[in-house]
Length: 235
Length: 211
Image (cartoon, rainbow over all chains, first blue to last red):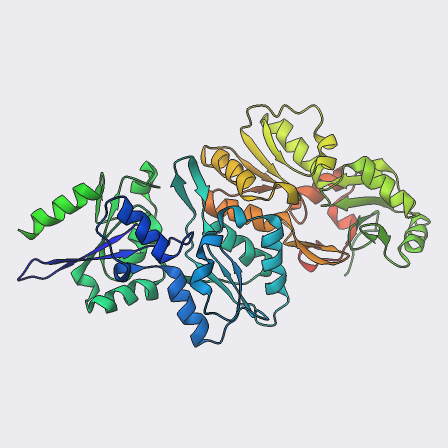
């Protein structure tokens, strides 16, 4: 989970946006879950890959074969899925069966111009019962099988971050990103010109602080510490 | 292809060259018979990981191929050799029918992962299990990295895509023991006492052919 903080020099107002690669549920369900946990978050503040993907599908006349979590399907209700000419892959969890992956592969291999849209490219994430493979691993599997390159929608794709910034009418140097994924949150944000901080929670691992290519602008124990430091910095 | 030395051995791929599943490629039996009358050693090399050597041999004999078990060199054999060499206890993601070729190997408390063509293991839960072992330091041994294989009803994902996914997630490179890796062919030729320049390979997949 990532929070954008927007700092106005004069007013020290902070605007918040939530930029997530969550693809196991619709935004509505996701926002409701967080509200139930006591978070002050609204639908309009959330940027997620599925809606971004739908826009791209419509713009490019793409009809997807979906390999996604059942909980995400409603996001695609308005999308024509007949006679697919591309594959959209998300964090399908248990839907990542050999049968389903094979079906996606067979769609791609049968297309003259195979198009694979991946909702994020994360390597793994942490759940209460341990580390699990994320969509990126399965994206790489299909890339290898078909000898193609996927287009990534969601973090760390530049377009995804920039769409959130444009929604706030802000420049990258006015925004700080906080997240637990050194590559997708921190690296992705930095590539857009933002500063980024990694929290030592979630999928964080100590070796992230010696990452060969990404150096966060700060490492903090958790979101609370990040916010405390930022607010102190403002005053 | 020009050979500088006399041809001493022919390595022949099985799946796609001699047969597809339980169907012989048309004319292959006769071709093999003709080859047998020439003064060359023949070795059947295969990345087929769904079967152990014994059942593979039986299947081909049923299709009227003149072939013996000791002429078959598989990537499973190569994998077993490596496991023994490294003294590791593998999580075997291989087809049940291939387990026979790993008889005698300790698989309790695994500290290595061996991946072959095993569709029944390429599911979310089992791959997560393998992923966690590798994240904890277990070596990843790939029997081969074929992208797909041919079934009578079309193409199906091979082990390569899943190994690639695990490599990406863990940032660990697999050790590939099957075709088209050099050690595989060197091992196969060693068993018939041949040098590479004295042998020729016949197969059906471009990226796997080695001169």
